[in-house]
Image (cartoon, rainbow, N blue to C red; front, side):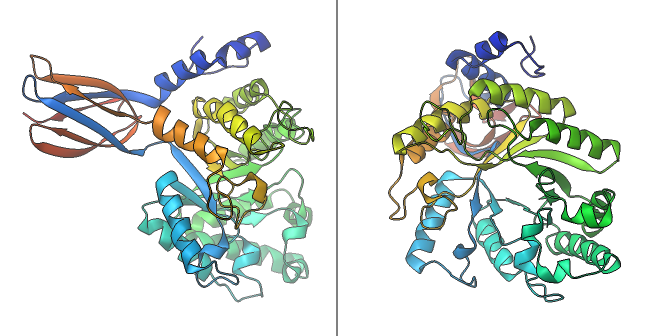
Length: 408
């Protein structure tokens, strides 16, 4: 069995992949490489990771921006940015980039809130993804858009797609193209299924270098009520030559029936693994775009964080995990927040910190051998390495697998 090229497996084989030892082994195989330090024989060497290559992200509420309709207090903003910078290296606008937020009235396009959020993230060296160019569900389409005739609608679609990608060219490199197409049908119902291709090429007219993602929910939860339709939809889009470059799987309600008595979210690690195996057949990057852990209480949500986060991090095609918000003071489901409204960390926050910044983080030291070589396995990312009175900043990347740092 080749771990880096998973295939659909029998249930027993999937369960065997999900033992703690197997997950740790897979993480070590796909998320770590070698750092080789050349220095004076016997010299001390200190290796400190300062950033992960893997993307651990979060959604950013509109309220962070001072120019939003309901901005958070200066004190909360300061704390929000502190927690953001200390725990995440990736982000996405929760709502500020959506069409209904950027063009509430026909012809009056306003990216100021989305721009301000991007500016704050950029200052923290946190890249953002674009969510979303269109939202297929009719209830999220503005009335002025619904009132357009088909020719006017097609023109508005093209203007929106080109406009948003051109505006963020050089700043945002990937976008969800048309959100939640399984349970929504407004644009395709009015303009035909080919409009998705029009959307994509109009978006690329604004920025030819962007990567376009599909994105939907109900994919990874037990029973996967949207799994089969999603796989069929992706296959059809690719057959239609829609330039899809990535797959977004919303991770709302990663929970097992052991901790969530509602049955709303009940799933299993085996089902998540099996579904990711199926989706990986497209050989496209996968991002867990909207992650939430639901349970009956704080303890249960902490358990689920520890149960599912390693499964996702250990999957070869998964390149990012984005929590759908982290602060209870501005959260779609406050009980699912990692930090409470008073900024008290929940057990989810404790689990996140332990996994990302302890278990999956490299900090080590030692002495070079008699030949002046010090070697260590390390998680892919950015490092500060000190030896022989000097410090060097280097990057260990997944593409290279290893790096050599010379202090001789």
